[in-house]
Amino acid sequence: MMSAANPTLVLFRHDLRLGDNLALVAAAGRGGPVIPVFVFDEESPGVRPIGGARRWWLHHSLTALSADLAKRGSRLIVRRGVMADVAKALARETGAAAVFWNRRYDPAGRNADAATKTALLAAGLAAESFDGFLLHEPWRLLTGGGTPFKVFTPFWRALQASGPPRDPVDAPTTLPAPVCWPDSLAVDDLGLTPRRPDWSTGLAETWIPGEAAANDRLELFLAEILDGYAERRDRPDIDATSRLSPHLAHGEISPRRIRHAAMNVKASGRDRDKFLAELAWREFSWHLLFHRPDLPVANCNPAFDAFAWVEDREGFRAWRKGKTGYPMVDAGMRQLWSTGWMHNRVRMVAASFLVKHLLTDWRKGEAWFWDTLVDADMASNAASWQWVAGSGADAAPWFRIFNPVLQGEKFDKDGDYVRANLPELADEPGPSVHRAANAKRGLYPAAIIGHDFARARALAALETMRLAKG
Ligand SMILES: Cc1cc2nc3c(=O)[nH]c(=O)nc-3n(C[C@H](O)[C@H](O)[C@H](O)COP(=O)(O)OP(=O)(O)OC[C@H]3O[C@@H](n4cnc5c(N)ncnc54)[C@H](O)[C@@H]3O)c2cc1C
Image: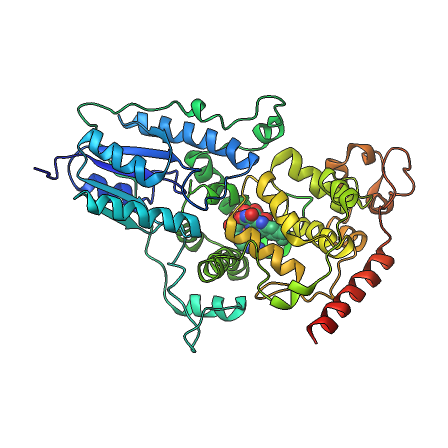
């Protein structure tokens, strides 16, 4: 006979936290033992394996979660395999009566969770899912015409008009342990950290994964950085944004916790609104992906299917290595490689350079970011790449082609960001560093393509696409 005294399994995925975790709270509320589980699932159909930088983060995040659970007399059971199979087998092994989880919204995750629910219900178990990755469910808002939003501003207006999300909930005070714990892999057994070569030194110097660090960063951001955010957020040379993106990607902190804290701190309306609008871009991206599961692979604007992308292997390599001869682009790509993160303004400049100067298909850039970003997020990454490329739902127009030198001079006025990331230009003084490509020949590459030439070529390619469309 199953009863509330039977254990409840809680599946952790993109919610590696104890606070504001509805699935965990509900499991604790059932009264019986709670068994926290992480299934490393790269086998369910359609799963896109996470990239190297996220694997590194995941290792440390799981380690932190295990330690946080241990402090409460609990444990994280780690398994590997197909979510539905592992959940069912573990439930049988432990005599669990129920399996709870917080919902995922990526296409493969949704399918895997649906399969898990079917398998559990067929076995006579309770299976229940909760929300917690977004402020609101991605299907909640539709236009007046009943269709998904394609443009951010009306989405944001509708989001603001739709009422606040629920308040975050605290972590359960107790997590009763089962009489006998099931076997578990060690986090190390998942082999998530790089060994030969170990490229993770810069990541380890930059980040502390885990819920406690996420909360600390939020506190610091609200106390010292939010003031002036609207004006300073575009400057890569200073610490002027929240840097919460990798914590959000792994669910170490919930967007509701962030929003709630931002609403309850003393701040100027302008700074708070700008910050909340950025969080809303994340919501918008997930709304897009929910309604267009092919967002990471297919142009939202089908006219771009006729675009004549160029196979420029040398150019793509120079871009990845941060050796294009454009200091702002190169500084961004080196920051990405060494820390797993890049400032938003520089992401736009670097992405634009790949797509418009080199005419390289945005999907190649998306895949490189997917592999190297610690905050790689299926929806935000794909939506942002399509936005930059001009193929997206609400995209920057193709004819707006960033001049990387002018972007550098505008947003990295004194050149500090470039010098911090390009050691070969470290002694180039002041803003002249943005035009240093030719002066430093030998040490630093000359520009791999001239801006005026690239601009004219990109506009001609767009015209050809337009003509092909008829
Ligand atoms: C080409 C390209 C690729 C990108 N890929 C990703 C990605 O894989 N993962 C990712 O989280 N963001 C991505 N972004 C969006 C943005 O650059 C990052 O969210 C931001 O730089 C994270 O830094 P932060 O936490 O300090 O941001 P803050 O300025 O502090 O913003 C707060 C939060 O709002 C969200 N946010 C901010 N800007 C955006 C945006 N434009 N789109 C969606 N959400 C946003 C993030 O969750 C962020 O943590 C990409 C942008 C570009 C141009």
